[in-house]
Image 1 (cartoon, rainbow, N blue to C red):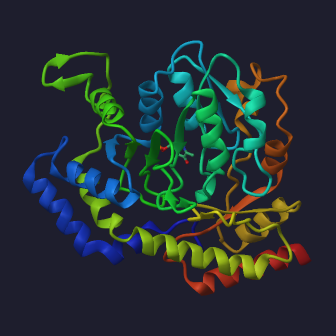
Image 2: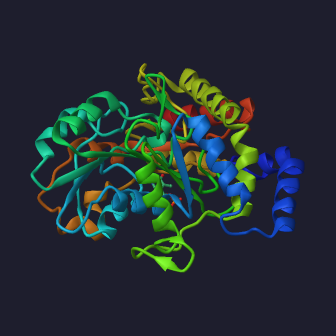
Length: 364
Ligand SMILES: *Cc1c(COP(=O)(O)O)cnc(C)c1O
């Protein structure tokens, strides 16, 4: 059996450190906004090269609070990609704004910067590129478009902890960066968790107030906020794992590069933009014979998955409102993409067995 991710092996590798950290957090009983949260925020900010990091309850909340802090509201438009997890669009909709989807680059699956300016209207307030599958979006042109049109740049870094673009970490490029610590993400905790990185003290203050019931001083509430704090226990686990993130990402790249060597002649393997460091949250290929490959893998108890089978403008929740919108690259990619297991602890034999099985499926 080969799973998509193997959280158990990773836990066993780190067990003594994680258990010690969790037990210490239990003993401290400072469960809400305790010392591990502050410690993790400082360590994560230092790692990412940002001045401020604010931990929240999930990646979805990170996006929601970032969109609010950017001042986006009812009637506004936010430009994003249709080839992402639904949470990117949900955050825009939560504040009463409208997602405007621009098509993707067929090589990187990231938002195509050449198509952004045609989508800007007087109502556009922000752009949310997603560093999909761990590959940084093409940020230089997106940054200049934001500067030229006075738009807030919010990065969706849920899949890209540790990825960089021209030597800058994802999450340090836009005004706000949104991370998820869902267990299977490159940096994952043991439940839900998230974080917003901010370039200014003012934005960090706003996120801190929003995550804690609109309150700066206890029982004084200046705005309507939310209950969206990272648990101290989760922060304790994240501090242990943050010390290993470069090793985890290096190992993901090792698995990905071996796949590409073994499969490059039979499927379209991931393209690595030379400007960035891809951290392979997913290893996603394109093939016209997805069903045959997935059936053969499943026969041998090898996992695979389709991220994402339906672009957002075609989802039931959006289909009617976006009936006239055609995004041919995202639609084509959704029909031909498939993701293979990739995790830091994946043994070389598993990668080789998997590649061999894909070959057999395509030969048969
Ligand atoms: C996982 C993910 C999110 C949401 O994160 P949660 O922590 O699950 O709320 C948002 N955007 C993208 C691209 C993701 O992959």
